[in-house]
Length: 375
Ligand SMILES: Cc1cc2nc3c(=O)[nH]c(=O)nc-3n(C[C@H](O)[C@H](O)[C@H](O)COP(=O)(O)OP(=O)(O)OC[C@H]3O[C@@H](n4cnc5c(N)ncnc54)[C@H](O)[C@@H]3O)c2cc1C
Image 1: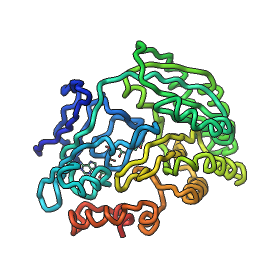
Image 2: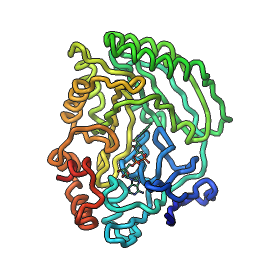
Image 3: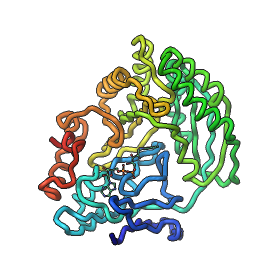
Image 4: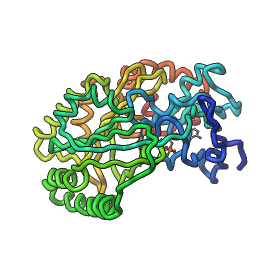
Protein backbone atom coordinates (compact mmCIF):
# COMPACT_ATOMS: atom_id res chain seq x y z
CA UNK A 1 0.00 0.00 0.00
CA UNK A 2 1.31 3.44 -0.87
CA UNK A 3 0.16 6.84 0.08
CA UNK A 4 1.14 10.36 1.01
CA UNK A 5 0.65 9.89 4.76
CA UNK A 6 2.18 13.07 6.00
CA UNK A 7 2.11 15.05 9.19
CA UNK A 8 2.56 18.71 8.42
CA UNK A 9 3.61 21.22 11.03
CA UNK A 10 3.68 24.97 10.88
CA UNK A 11 6.31 26.85 12.85
CA UNK A 12 5.13 30.08 14.47
CA UNK A 13 6.79 33.36 15.42
CA UNK A 14 9.34 32.95 12.68
CA UNK A 15 10.81 29.86 14.34
CA UNK A 16 12.09 27.18 12.03
CA UNK A 17 10.42 23.81 12.32
CA UNK A 18 12.81 20.87 12.27
CA UNK A 19 11.26 18.76 9.54
CA UNK A 20 13.38 15.75 10.41
CA UNK A 21 11.39 15.37 13.58
CA UNK A 22 8.04 15.11 11.89
CA UNK A 23 8.15 13.11 8.72
CA UNK A 24 5.17 10.80 8.26
CA UNK A 25 5.44 7.14 7.41
CA UNK A 26 3.66 4.56 5.33
CA UNK A 27 0.97 2.51 7.03
CA UNK A 28 1.51 -1.04 8.14
CA UNK A 29 -0.58 -3.60 6.34
CA UNK A 30 -4.15 -3.62 7.60
CA UNK A 31 -4.01 -0.35 9.47
CA UNK A 32 -3.65 3.29 8.66
CA UNK A 33 -1.68 4.96 11.39
CA UNK A 34 0.05 8.28 10.97
CA UNK A 35 2.81 7.81 13.53
CA UNK A 36 4.12 10.88 15.27
CA UNK A 37 7.88 10.66 15.68
CA UNK A 38 8.16 12.74 18.80
CA UNK A 39 9.12 15.32 19.88
CA UNK A 40 6.37 17.56 18.56
CA UNK A 41 6.69 21.09 19.85
CA UNK A 42 2.98 21.79 19.97
CA UNK A 43 1.71 23.74 22.94
CA UNK A 44 0.14 20.75 24.67
CA UNK A 45 0.23 16.93 24.48
CA UNK A 46 -1.56 14.08 26.25
CA UNK A 47 0.05 11.54 28.58
CA UNK A 48 1.39 9.33 25.78
CA UNK A 49 3.05 10.02 22.45
CA UNK A 50 2.96 6.47 21.02
CA UNK A 51 -0.24 7.37 19.22
CA UNK A 52 -1.26 8.55 15.76
CA UNK A 53 -2.01 12.15 14.80
CA UNK A 54 -5.39 11.13 13.31
CA UNK A 55 -6.16 9.04 16.41
CA UNK A 56 -5.46 11.69 19.02
CA UNK A 57 -7.50 14.35 17.28
CA UNK A 58 -10.21 11.82 16.39
CA UNK A 59 -11.16 11.27 20.04
CA UNK A 60 -10.43 14.76 21.40
CA UNK A 61 -7.28 14.01 23.40
CA UNK A 62 -6.46 16.70 25.95
CA UNK A 63 -3.82 17.66 28.45
CA UNK A 64 -4.19 20.39 31.05
CA UNK A 65 -3.91 24.18 31.28
CA UNK A 66 -6.76 26.64 31.25
CA UNK A 67 -5.01 28.67 28.55
CA UNK A 68 -4.79 25.63 26.26
CA UNK A 69 -7.41 23.83 24.23
CA UNK A 70 -7.71 20.10 23.54
CA UNK A 71 -5.43 18.72 20.79
CA UNK A 72 -7.97 19.21 17.94
CA UNK A 73 -7.80 22.97 18.57
CA UNK A 74 -4.16 22.83 17.40
CA UNK A 75 -5.14 21.47 13.99
CA UNK A 76 -5.14 24.05 11.20
CA UNK A 77 -5.78 21.79 8.21
CA UNK A 78 -6.34 18.16 7.31
CA UNK A 79 -6.94 15.97 4.29
CA UNK A 80 -9.72 13.38 4.16
CA UNK A 81 -10.22 10.45 1.80
CA UNK A 82 -14.01 10.26 1.62
CA UNK A 83 -16.25 7.23 1.20
CA UNK A 84 -16.83 8.36 -2.39
CA UNK A 85 -13.08 8.10 -3.12
CA UNK A 86 -12.73 11.88 -3.34
CA UNK A 87 -9.83 13.57 -1.52
CA UNK A 88 -10.93 16.66 0.40
CA UNK A 89 -8.65 19.39 1.79
CA UNK A 90 -10.17 21.05 4.85
CA UNK A 91 -9.28 24.16 6.83
CA UNK A 92 -10.95 27.37 8.04
CA UNK A 93 -10.72 28.55 4.43
CA UNK A 94 -11.44 25.34 2.47
CA UNK A 95 -14.56 23.30 3.29
CA UNK A 96 -14.90 24.99 6.70
CA UNK A 97 -17.99 22.97 7.75
CA UNK A 98 -16.23 19.66 7.20
CA UNK A 99 -13.14 21.10 8.93
CA UNK A 100 -15.12 21.97 12.06
CA UNK A 101 -16.49 18.43 12.16
CA UNK A 102 -13.26 16.67 11.21
CA UNK A 103 -11.03 18.22 13.88
CA UNK A 104 -12.70 15.70 16.24
CA UNK A 105 -13.90 13.13 13.74
CA UNK A 106 -14.50 9.88 15.70
CA UNK A 107 -13.09 8.04 12.70
CA UNK A 108 -16.41 8.28 10.87
CA UNK A 109 -16.01 11.02 8.28
CA UNK A 110 -13.34 9.44 6.08
CA UNK A 111 -9.73 8.36 6.26
CA UNK A 112 -7.47 11.14 7.52
CA UNK A 113 -4.48 11.32 5.18
CA UNK A 114 -2.68 14.29 6.66
CA UNK A 115 -2.96 16.59 9.64
CA UNK A 116 -1.37 20.03 9.88
CA UNK A 117 -0.69 21.09 13.44
CA UNK A 118 0.12 24.58 14.64
CA UNK A 119 3.49 24.14 16.30
CA UNK A 120 5.61 26.36 18.50
CA UNK A 121 9.37 26.72 18.99
CA UNK A 122 10.82 23.85 20.98
CA UNK A 123 10.58 24.56 24.70
CA UNK A 124 11.58 23.12 28.04
CA UNK A 125 9.23 22.67 30.98
CA UNK A 126 9.89 22.74 34.69
CA UNK A 127 7.62 20.47 36.71
CA UNK A 128 7.13 21.14 40.39
CA UNK A 129 4.99 18.65 42.29
CA UNK A 130 4.01 19.01 45.94
CA UNK A 131 1.44 17.66 48.40
CA UNK A 132 -1.77 19.34 49.49
CA UNK A 133 -5.30 18.39 50.55
CA UNK A 134 -8.58 18.25 48.66
CA UNK A 135 -10.29 21.07 50.61
CA UNK A 136 -7.20 23.29 50.18
CA UNK A 137 -6.77 22.76 46.46
CA UNK A 138 -10.47 23.31 45.82
CA UNK A 139 -10.42 26.47 47.93
CA UNK A 140 -7.44 27.86 45.96
CA UNK A 141 -8.36 26.61 42.49
CA UNK A 142 -8.33 30.06 40.87
CA UNK A 143 -4.87 30.83 42.28
CA UNK A 144 -3.42 27.54 41.09
CA UNK A 145 -4.88 28.09 37.61
CA UNK A 146 -3.28 31.53 37.49
CA UNK A 147 0.03 30.43 38.98
CA UNK A 148 0.86 27.63 36.56
CA UNK A 149 0.31 27.33 32.82
CA UNK A 150 -0.20 23.55 32.98
CA UNK A 151 -1.72 22.94 36.39
CA UNK A 152 -3.33 19.63 37.32
CA UNK A 153 -3.83 17.65 40.48
CA UNK A 154 -4.20 14.06 41.61
CA UNK A 155 -6.61 13.20 44.39
CA UNK A 156 -6.16 9.99 46.37
CA UNK A 157 -9.73 8.78 47.01
CA UNK A 158 -10.69 7.49 50.49
CA UNK A 159 -8.38 10.23 51.84
CA UNK A 160 -7.97 14.00 51.51
CA UNK A 161 -4.47 13.68 50.06
CA UNK A 162 -3.72 15.59 46.87
CA UNK A 163 -0.66 15.92 44.68
CA UNK A 164 -0.46 19.28 42.92
CA UNK A 165 1.55 19.43 39.69
CA UNK A 166 2.71 22.67 38.10
CA UNK A 167 4.40 22.65 34.69
CA UNK A 168 5.77 25.85 33.21
CA UNK A 169 8.18 26.90 30.46
CA UNK A 170 11.71 27.48 31.70
CA UNK A 171 15.30 28.15 30.57
CA UNK A 172 16.78 26.09 33.43
CA UNK A 173 19.01 23.14 32.50
CA UNK A 174 17.44 19.65 32.46
CA UNK A 175 17.35 17.87 35.82
CA UNK A 176 15.48 14.96 37.33
CA UNK A 177 15.45 12.99 40.56
CA UNK A 178 13.58 9.99 39.14
CA UNK A 179 14.67 6.60 40.39
CA UNK A 180 13.85 3.16 38.97
CA UNK A 181 13.41 1.73 42.46
CA UNK A 182 10.74 4.23 43.49
CA UNK A 183 9.11 4.87 40.12
CA UNK A 184 8.98 1.29 38.85
CA UNK A 185 9.88 -1.28 41.54
CA UNK A 186 7.50 0.43 44.00
CA UNK A 187 5.27 2.66 41.85
CA UNK A 188 4.56 -0.01 39.22
CA UNK A 189 5.42 -3.59 40.22
CA UNK A 190 4.66 -3.45 43.95
CA UNK A 191 1.51 -1.41 43.26
CA UNK A 192 0.25 -3.90 40.69
CA UNK A 193 0.89 -6.78 43.11
CA UNK A 194 -0.91 -5.05 46.00
CA UNK A 195 -3.85 -4.11 43.79
CA UNK A 196 -4.06 -7.75 42.73
CA UNK A 197 -4.16 -8.77 46.42
CA UNK A 198 -6.89 -6.16 46.93
CA UNK A 199 -9.10 -7.93 44.40
CA UNK A 200 -9.42 -10.63 47.12
CA UNK A 201 -9.47 -8.16 50.06
CA UNK A 202 -11.10 -4.95 48.71
CA UNK A 203 -10.82 -3.24 52.11
CA UNK A 204 -7.09 -2.85 51.31
CA UNK A 205 -7.75 -0.23 48.61
CA UNK A 206 -8.04 2.82 50.91
CA UNK A 207 -4.87 1.67 52.71
CA UNK A 208 -3.02 1.29 49.37
CA UNK A 209 -4.09 4.80 48.32
CA UNK A 210 -2.84 6.36 51.57
CA UNK A 211 0.30 4.28 51.71
CA UNK A 212 1.37 5.08 48.14
CA UNK A 213 0.66 8.75 48.67
CA UNK A 214 3.08 8.72 51.62
CA UNK A 215 5.68 6.64 49.80
CA UNK A 216 5.70 8.38 46.42
CA UNK A 217 3.69 11.57 46.37
CA UNK A 218 4.08 13.36 49.70
CA UNK A 219 7.32 15.27 49.11
CA UNK A 220 8.20 18.17 46.83
CA UNK A 221 9.86 17.08 43.58
CA UNK A 222 11.19 19.10 40.66
CA UNK A 223 12.31 18.17 37.19
CA UNK A 224 13.18 20.00 33.98
CA UNK A 225 13.11 18.49 30.49
CA UNK A 226 11.99 19.07 26.91
CA UNK A 227 8.23 19.68 26.81
CA UNK A 228 7.12 16.27 25.53
CA UNK A 229 9.10 14.48 28.26
CA UNK A 230 7.21 16.44 30.91
CA UNK A 231 3.79 16.23 29.23
CA UNK A 232 4.08 12.44 28.83
CA UNK A 233 3.93 10.30 31.95
CA UNK A 234 3.77 6.68 33.00
CA UNK A 235 0.19 5.38 32.84
CA UNK A 236 1.08 2.01 34.42
CA UNK A 237 -0.80 -1.19 33.64
CA UNK A 238 -4.21 -2.10 32.20
CA UNK A 239 -7.07 -0.01 33.42
CA UNK A 240 -10.69 1.11 33.00
CA UNK A 241 -11.12 4.89 32.81
CA UNK A 242 -13.80 7.54 32.52
CA UNK A 243 -12.92 11.19 31.96
CA UNK A 244 -15.85 13.58 31.68
CA UNK A 245 -15.50 17.34 31.28
CA UNK A 246 -17.66 19.58 33.43
CA UNK A 247 -17.89 23.40 33.42
CA UNK A 248 -14.90 24.62 35.40
CA UNK A 249 -17.08 26.42 37.96
CA UNK A 250 -18.53 23.08 39.06
CA UNK A 251 -15.23 21.38 39.88
CA UNK A 252 -15.45 21.89 43.62
CA UNK A 253 -19.05 20.75 44.01
CA UNK A 254 -18.57 17.68 41.82
CA UNK A 255 -15.43 16.48 43.58
CA UNK A 256 -16.90 16.99 47.04
CA UNK A 257 -19.95 15.00 45.94
CA UNK A 258 -17.74 12.22 44.63
CA UNK A 259 -15.85 12.13 47.94
CA UNK A 260 -19.13 12.01 49.85
CA UNK A 261 -20.47 9.21 47.64
CA UNK A 262 -17.30 7.16 48.11
CA UNK A 263 -17.62 7.57 51.88
CA UNK A 264 -21.33 6.80 51.89
CA UNK A 265 -21.55 3.65 49.79
CA UNK A 266 -20.12 0.70 51.68
CA UNK A 267 -17.96 -1.51 49.54
CA UNK A 268 -17.35 1.16 46.87
CA UNK A 269 -13.58 1.24 46.26
CA UNK A 270 -11.76 3.75 44.06
CA UNK A 271 -8.16 3.39 42.95
CA UNK A 272 -5.83 6.37 42.97
CA UNK A 273 -5.57 8.79 41.37
CA UNK A 274 -8.62 10.80 40.47
CA UNK A 275 -6.85 13.12 38.06
CA UNK A 276 -8.19 16.63 37.52
CA UNK A 277 -7.10 18.57 34.43
CA UNK A 278 -8.33 21.79 32.84
CA UNK A 279 -8.93 22.95 29.28
CA UNK A 280 -9.93 26.14 27.54
CA UNK A 281 -13.35 26.32 25.85
CA UNK A 282 -13.34 25.87 22.07
CA UNK A 283 -15.45 25.76 18.91
CA UNK A 284 -14.78 22.12 17.95
CA UNK A 285 -18.24 20.60 17.39
CA UNK A 286 -17.84 17.37 19.35
CA UNK A 287 -15.39 18.75 21.91
CA UNK A 288 -16.30 18.12 25.57
CA UNK A 289 -15.09 21.74 26.03
CA UNK A 290 -17.36 23.19 23.33
CA UNK A 291 -17.90 26.85 24.31
CA UNK A 292 -16.95 26.40 27.96
CA UNK A 293 -13.78 26.29 30.02
CA UNK A 294 -13.77 22.84 31.56
CA UNK A 295 -12.36 20.54 34.20
CA UNK A 296 -11.78 16.93 33.14
CA UNK A 297 -12.21 14.52 36.07
CA UNK A 298 -10.52 11.23 35.22
CA UNK A 299 -11.38 8.21 37.37
CA UNK A 300 -9.52 4.94 37.13
CA UNK A 301 -9.88 1.28 38.09
CA UNK A 302 -6.77 -0.77 37.40
CA UNK A 303 -6.89 -4.36 36.19
CA UNK A 304 -3.79 -5.83 37.90
CA UNK A 305 -2.27 -8.55 35.69
CA UNK A 306 -5.31 -8.09 33.43
CA UNK A 307 -7.73 -9.33 36.12
CA UNK A 308 -11.34 -8.14 35.85
CA UNK A 309 -12.40 -5.74 38.60
CA UNK A 310 -15.99 -4.73 39.44
CA UNK A 311 -16.70 -1.34 37.87
CA UNK A 312 -20.47 -0.97 37.73
CA UNK A 313 -21.05 0.74 41.06
CA UNK A 314 -18.16 3.20 40.82
CA UNK A 315 -19.00 4.02 37.20
CA UNK A 316 -22.69 4.64 37.86
CA UNK A 317 -21.93 6.80 40.92
CA UNK A 318 -19.39 8.84 38.95
CA UNK A 319 -21.61 9.19 35.87
CA UNK A 320 -24.58 10.31 38.01
CA UNK A 321 -22.45 13.13 39.46
CA UNK A 322 -21.01 14.10 36.07
CA UNK A 323 -24.49 14.21 34.47
CA UNK A 324 -25.82 16.30 37.35
CA UNK A 325 -23.04 18.84 36.69
CA UNK A 326 -23.63 19.07 32.91
CA UNK A 327 -20.74 16.74 32.12
CA UNK A 328 -19.74 15.60 28.66
CA UNK A 329 -17.85 12.32 28.22
CA UNK A 330 -14.39 11.90 26.68
CA UNK A 331 -14.76 10.05 23.37
CA UNK A 332 -11.78 7.73 23.95
CA UNK A 333 -12.94 6.55 27.36
CA UNK A 334 -15.86 4.64 28.84
CA UNK A 335 -19.35 6.18 29.03
CA UNK A 336 -22.89 4.92 28.84
CA UNK A 337 -24.49 7.83 26.97
CA UNK A 338 -27.17 7.29 24.33
CA UNK A 339 -27.64 9.41 21.20
CA UNK A 340 -30.51 11.25 22.90
CA UNK A 341 -28.25 12.27 25.78
CA UNK A 342 -25.32 13.15 23.52
CA UNK A 343 -27.59 15.46 21.53
CA UNK A 344 -28.40 17.37 24.71
CA UNK A 345 -24.81 17.40 25.96
CA UNK A 346 -23.12 18.48 22.70
CA UNK A 347 -25.00 21.44 21.18
CA UNK A 348 -23.38 20.93 17.74
CA UNK A 349 -24.11 17.18 17.65
CA UNK A 350 -26.89 17.56 14.99
CA UNK A 351 -24.51 19.59 12.77
CA UNK A 352 -21.88 16.84 13.07
CA UNK A 353 -24.50 14.20 12.19
CA UNK A 354 -25.59 16.06 9.08
CA UNK A 355 -21.97 16.38 7.84
CA UNK A 356 -21.38 12.69 8.58
CA UNK A 357 -24.53 11.64 6.72
CA UNK A 358 -23.52 13.76 3.73
CA UNK A 359 -19.94 12.42 3.59
CA UNK A 360 -20.75 8.78 4.34
CA UNK A 361 -24.41 8.16 3.39
CA UNK A 362 -24.08 4.35 3.50
CA UNK A 363 -22.18 4.29 6.81
CA UNK A 364 -19.07 2.44 5.62
CA UNK A 365 -17.02 4.12 8.37
CA UNK A 366 -19.43 3.09 11.16
CA UNK A 367 -18.79 0.30 13.64
CA UNK A 368 -20.92 -1.09 16.46
CA UNK A 369 -19.79 1.63 18.91
CA UNK A 370 -20.56 4.42 16.43
CA UNK A 371 -23.93 2.90 15.58
CA UNK A 372 -24.87 3.29 19.25
CA UNK A 373 -23.66 6.91 19.17
CA UNK A 374 -25.57 7.86 16.01
CA UNK A 375 -28.70 5.67 16.10
C1 LIG B 1 -1.86 4.96 28.06
C2 LIG B 1 -2.84 5.97 27.56
C3 LIG B 1 -2.77 7.28 28.00
C4 LIG B 1 -3.70 8.21 27.54
N1 LIG B 1 -3.63 9.49 27.97
C5 LIG B 1 -4.54 10.40 27.55
C6 LIG B 1 -4.47 11.76 27.97
O1 LIG B 1 -3.56 12.18 28.68
N2 LIG B 1 -5.44 12.60 27.54
C7 LIG B 1 -6.46 12.18 26.75
O2 LIG B 1 -7.32 12.98 26.42
N3 LIG B 1 -6.52 10.92 26.29
C8 LIG B 1 -5.59 10.03 26.67
N4 LIG B 1 -5.65 8.74 26.21
C9 LIG B 1 -6.62 8.41 25.19
C10 LIG B 1 -5.93 8.51 23.81
O3 LIG B 1 -5.41 9.79 23.59
C11 LIG B 1 -6.92 8.19 22.71
O4 LIG B 1 -7.34 6.86 22.91
C12 LIG B 1 -6.33 8.36 21.32
O5 LIG B 1 -7.37 8.27 20.40
C13 LIG B 1 -5.30 7.29 21.05
O6 LIG B 1 -4.74 7.49 19.78
P1 LIG B 1 -4.52 6.27 18.78
O7 LIG B 1 -3.60 6.74 17.74
O8 LIG B 1 -4.21 5.04 19.55
O9 LIG B 1 -6.01 6.21 18.22
P2 LIG B 1 -6.87 4.97 17.78
O10 LIG B 1 -7.45 4.35 19.02
O11 LIG B 1 -6.14 4.13 16.84
O12 LIG B 1 -8.03 5.74 17.01
C14 LIG B 1 -8.89 6.63 17.64
C15 LIG B 1 -10.02 6.96 16.65
O13 LIG B 1 -9.48 7.59 15.49
C16 LIG B 1 -9.80 6.82 14.33
N5 LIG B 1 -8.66 6.89 13.41
C17 LIG B 1 -7.37 6.55 13.65
N6 LIG B 1 -6.62 6.79 12.56
C18 LIG B 1 -7.45 7.28 11.62
C19 LIG B 1 -7.28 7.73 10.27
N7 LIG B 1 -6.09 7.76 9.68
N8 LIG B 1 -8.36 8.18 9.62
C20 LIG B 1 -9.59 8.19 10.20
N9 LIG B 1 -9.80 7.78 11.45
C21 LIG B 1 -8.76 7.35 12.15
C22 LIG B 1 -10.09 5.42 14.82
O14 LIG B 1 -10.96 4.75 13.93
C23 LIG B 1 -10.76 5.72 16.15
O15 LIG B 1 -12.10 6.08 15.97
C24 LIG B 1 -4.72 7.81 26.64
C25 LIG B 1 -4.78 6.49 26.20
C26 LIG B 1 -3.84 5.58 26.64
C27 LIG B 1 -3.92 4.16 26.13
